[in-house]
Image (cartoon, rainbow, N blue to C red; front, side):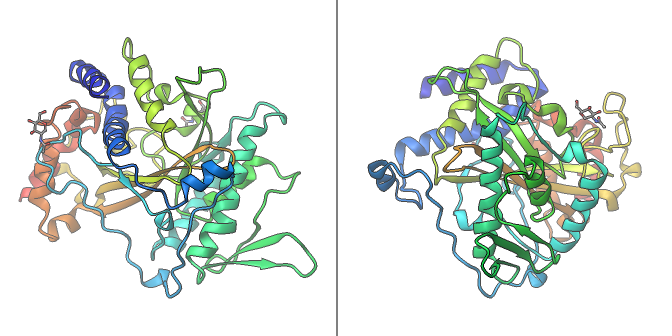
Length: 401
Ligand SMILES: *[C@@H]1O[C@H](CO)[C@@H](O)[C@H](O)[C@H]1NC(C)=O
Ligand SMILES: *[C@@H]1O[C@H](CO)[C@@H](O)[C@H](O)[C@H]1NC(C)=O
């Protein structure tokens, strides 16, 4: 293990590629930490894994604890401050185990976010949802999407948030209906045979404020060297990329080819993904700063204005910084494996916090230090990748003022 980590670190330290850095920033820390945890802890998952092995049962459902008195209207959004204590941006951004009950968070932004999601779905349908099904025989993708759909609508939401969602059984009708008390929507909990797969993704998009990437192993890859491919998605709030361009790509290619290094890195990332067992849920938080950027940011750069061409973007001067449109943008990312299709579901929820708020909380200095720390860790190019070149000086000056 140490040898693999060492090799990857070697590659990392020599690299100039922003794609590589992105990939490393997202996945390498997880790979190392999870591999380490996996070796040293092997904590039992919420699902009795030994039973699973003994009986060979595959369709285990995680235990979801209900929040009976939960009120979404009075629940503030999570306040994530992942930059705290980060004087240097090191490869130690932890991937943490996640209680499956906490997979999807609800708060007082729910209704507005869902409205926004619906309008973005209508306006940018193919960027928001797509599947890579080549023919109706291609049942793997449909099976995975349908499993996620039924888990979220049929099990997770009505169990976790009984005050917001309910399952009703029609009289004499064996099929069940999911009811959303907030939006008034009603949907079947299972995809009917004639319903196109894409519809499940459309419904997910307007039911939860989460972006979903569904990954399946490439059947043509050798068993000892699994490769994961993005086969379906529902992403309303992509941050600086057009998800449609990523469909059908292997993990390593999602962020562009990295000459000479792709193979090694691809392997470590795919191995990390391959080791996520059914019943294991993990999470992490990604952060950046955006200026004049909508939640839907499929064009331009996540980290600077979407109205400008990233190639020719001008450095923002302190006096030109639009403070009221500058936010700390955090993604709460989760990863888990569906028990039956064995597809991996990578999901994230986007939180934004006005820069002024961070400053008012007295954390301006700390955020400024973390921004400058991007340059000081063992992957200094992450600063340019996050487009710190464009906004960094103006933002840190504001935070320190
Ligand atoms: C970050 O990495 C540098 C260089 O590898 C190391 O010297 C430093 O101790 C690390 N800091 C933390 C907090 O891990
Ligand atoms: C997004 O990507 C798709 C697939 O490559 C392409 O057809 C579409 O034009 C892109 N949309 C934008 C707005 O870039």
